[in-house]
Image (cartoon, rainbow, N blue to C red; front, side, top):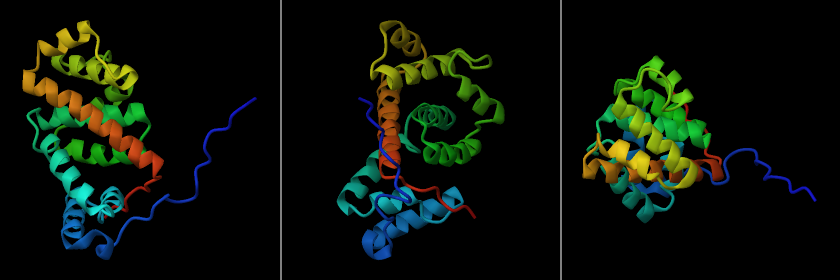
Amino acid sequence: MTVAGPVAPAGPRLRPGDRRDLGLVGWTVSTVSGRVAGSGPPNLFRTLGRHRPLFRGWLRFAGRLMPGGTLPRRETELVIIRVATLAGCDYEREHHLRLGRRAGVTDEDVLRLDRGPTADGWSPREAAILAAVDELHATHDVSDETWSAVGAHLSDRELIELVLLVGHYEMLATFITTLRIEPDAHR
């Protein structure tokens, strides 16, 4: 017997909220975020914002990882773009390609991100970080060898942040894909 996969519905599974759905704070945060990203209020924010208490808690947590984390912004964006690539989440990937450019991610970096941590051109630190990303994505764990390699470059706080950053963007990719969140309109 063959089991068919889910059939993608036309359009999002939940409509993005408007100002009334998100409330003044949620709408303001969404609007400002869109301006920073060069779009209207992001559909991710407008969808998640329909659950106001969860949205506010998520914003605080997400903001501690990016942009308020201890890892350098360029490395944070490399991690997020690699997660989005591995997860097949175009929404997340496109959004962070734009943000990554501002943080110093180059066209060459993007090509290397598609090839992964063994591509030529990564620094030893970047290669170790990206190897950990790939293992976390594939197994939800990191081998002792990879942990030792990445631990040679990152502090304990950065190691904690790296694991949470990967897990957070895996979660977002699942949310975006499952709810069929549509791309944002760009200015």
